[in-house]
Length: 165
Image: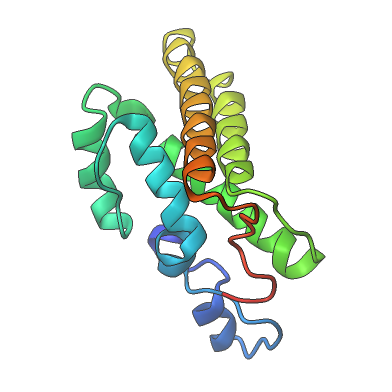
């Protein structure tokens, strides 16, 4: 998270500074908030939380999450870290390992898995708050995504375009 906040993660802008060539890779704000996949994931999370908007950058996230979950302050950073780590791992698998995702909900499930695991490392009272929250988020996101697919009648949800940023 510290590297994300300092814009020091190895994304397109920072790899270019190091003269690293290869596949096109996103800038960090685009990767975590601006690309089609990130927007869809944030929209799923917003719907699952019962919120009508999604954050478009890290600064908006802090305002958005405080308004969306006012009684859950201790877990804000962990939730953001879990989602960013899930997006990062997925991006790396797609760009560097030639893997494909079938659905953006794979990223949500990965996020919830990280969050659930990290909850087990917390004090019992915090763990009791986090584990059910992760499960509810996953269940609601999967339900909402299924409804979107049924309404849009789309079969292909490969939202991360192979080799693109």
